[in-house]
View 1: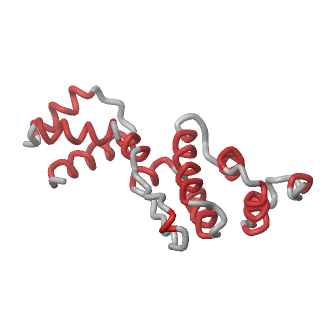
View 2: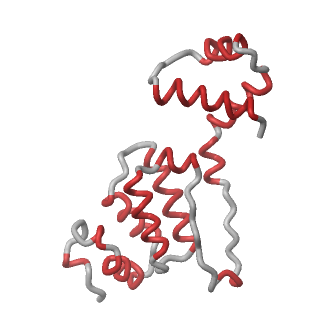
View 3: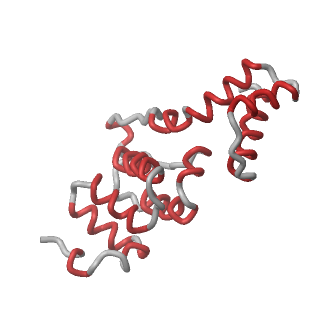
Length: 163
């Protein structure tokens, strides 16, 4: 990716997130043109910002059986870091490294949390709710409850036992 595009994205993020300014897109484009950026680079930068969530959803995860014994080392992308609070990122890493969930389940949980972050503040309880929606195996849920201390105080004792 060209440096100009990265600079433009940085300026846009600075302007929108940090400064909190609400400015018309046309006004921003004019300012960027005055700063010497090319319209092609400006278009690509806006494309990255507006379609960034599609990039998250389109990430390909290889799911063949040869990966069954490999270690799943998940690193959050910059876009994912914007949507997920730091404490939830840490908790997700803890859940992933517990080795209880499959790669597909872990990725589905991350995707659903990002989608939920558009509408609500993500908390430990909302993470657990998403895990319950995604994970169908009750023994995995039981293992997560016992391995992850952060879930112990949000899930009532009555639901911790297998039938």
